[in-house]
Image 1: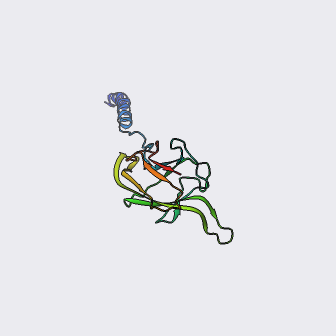
Image 2: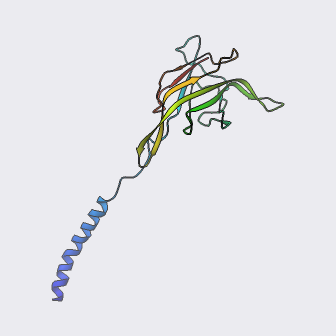
Image 3: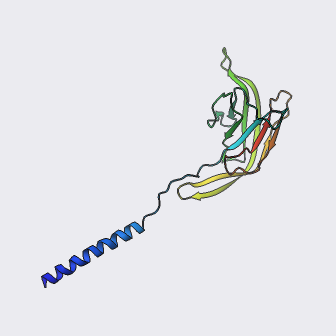
Length: 178
């Protein structure tokens, strides 16, 4: 009786091992790697006010978020070779105010910000979008509106919202003419 038991265990053990491996591999899920999970930035292109189809760089540009009083970290601060930028919109409110400062510098004696400052208010509605389990939820923005108070000293001459929805950071959403 003992030899019959050993013979049948020798046949059953490999079958059980193969079955176990099959179910183990079949129960695995693909890796949760998030590729498309970032909330898109508002892309702003700068154009020549006299020739609206020509991109125009802004000298020593600094962009600050007004309420948080922080420099935007998605662009190089005080860069002079930018004709477009991507800036984040706040997700905890329906508008974000930005100081756009051209010819930005620090005063040598006081350390105060110098340059020409225009304050833009970007208003929008936010829509949450589930991307995947790995990426979670991202914010998309709709009904984009950009306001600039009238001031004869504005360096920004005109603003044109070319895309009302911000679903990716691949295209220009707002054109600023200066």
